[in-house]
Image (cartoon, rainbow, N blue to C red; front, side, top):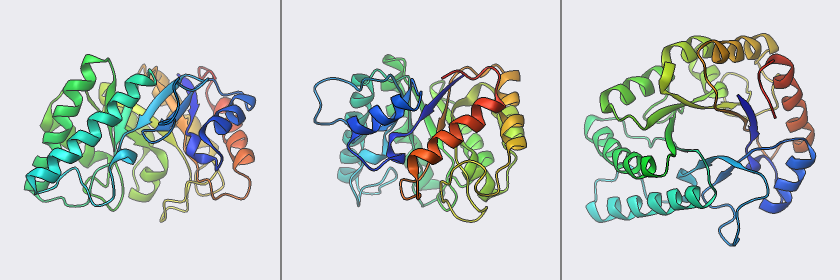
Amino acid sequence: MYLSCCIWALTGEAQENVLLLSRSGFKHIDIRAIDFKDQSKPPDLPVSCVGLSFAIPEGYSLDDTDIDRSIETGRHLRKALEHAVWANAGCAYVVPDYDNDADAMARFAGQLVHLADQAEEYDIKVCIEHFPGRSLPTISTTLSFLKDIGHPNLYLLLDIGHAQISGENPTKAVETAGDRLGYVHFDDNDGENDLHLSLCDGILTEDVIERTIKSLEITGYSGGISIELSNTLEDPVGAITSSRDIIMRAGNNVVM
């Protein structure tokens, strides 16, 4: 396992954020599909994962009922995936929309299958992030959705902060997900709001972090675990380095 950090935890320009993370010892970063769009070459640090949903314009959705808008959303997803290819990322993810009726979920699944097929050609894993308040609010519903689709290139993105809000045990989630676990976000909150606090500044404890990382080791997970914090924190760089240190203490097999 290796440690990464989402560059949107910082408020500066993308290249400046990469430099700050490099100085903090990080050797991998996560970016959004909107980051580095005006750059001719990829970031100076290897890109671990790309957030594809950030590229979808406001008003568009992954489960749109309008065929023309659905086609346009698919186009934005493909362009976002091309950005992940450009960045040489091994992983990418989307967040679900809000409508959870059967027809909406079928439309969402259709978009995901097309995306996963294309991403497979580039050896990029496509993950779905469980997201409280959306159509896949829990780890369990997301894993069931993935099982129903049955695509070999669709995975779970496990978000520890979201698990706290939905009241799910991340250690058990790792065990249940098995080889469908594609990526991991570490962040903290108060158990009710998606605050993206520095680790252990909310209800998350070092014991839970240690047990989660141990479970990842036992199941043979060898991918990235990424720190995803809010850029509105009082000291974003301090929050990142503090969270980094907590994770490095918790996992003997985690490398920078």
